[in-house]
Image (tube, rainbow, N blue to C red; front, side, top):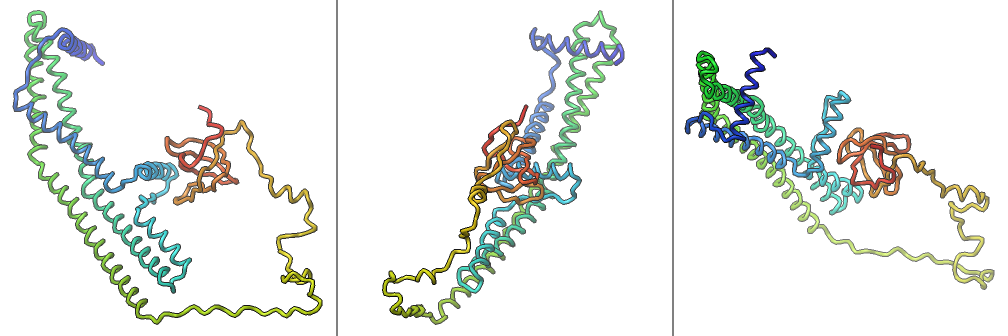
Length: 369
């Protein structure tokens, strides 16, 4: 920094101290300028808060949002192009229903209905994904651009204006010691910065119809989402109604128990207790008289980790839903290798490495700080 630059920084700092500590008054800005500044400040706060609340509206689960953010970060580190999506509640419910519906059998009334509702829920999750994408592209991203570009530029102009005001006020109070030409130049620069800042704030507030169009895009995306959701649910309702009508019109089949087996007990079985004879009783396949005692004891043995090694114990089962996650069962002992953030660990189990949520485990030996 040049000598002139250092002097200017000294002037600003001196004037600021005299105003904050000594109670000196600086040059006042007009009321119209202050009103513009107040409206821009409210706009800036509104944009930041609306972006945050819209993200919460689209993705209400804070743990899933944190997990998705961590997964996206990991994907960027690994160079993966496709990032995992937010796990929609409708999709998770649909997967659950479809799974048990197929296990129960689609030929049964309940099993078939579970599959129908499950598939509809998965379609609703796809519709919700489309809403997420539309709102992000047409509402969140434009607002983020406004915050990152126009509002940040205005803050830069206001900061520059404040610096030039302090420089001018310092020189004005020391007229006679500081050449009049320097005071005049400081005043010109102050007015120049004020005009630039005022123009940028006015243009932002005058063109607020752009923000109205972005709100309109948000509402349109929601309208399309609800229309598609109603269509999916209408089709599902008709399908379930047909299924109920068909079940009610189907003749009821009475349960017929199977005939009981008849056993012929001969004279040789007079001393039997009524069950199978010893020669007829089946031997369970899992019992072996020749099983060595030591081998039977070994079946209960599990390797233990070194007490010095960072580790944790699984409190619940964890099924991995995304690439890179480590699955485990309740009671498993997992070696800790790293803590990703306040919500996720990275560890190893049975030769497999991956990350998993902190609230699923109990730390036995913590990681070194």
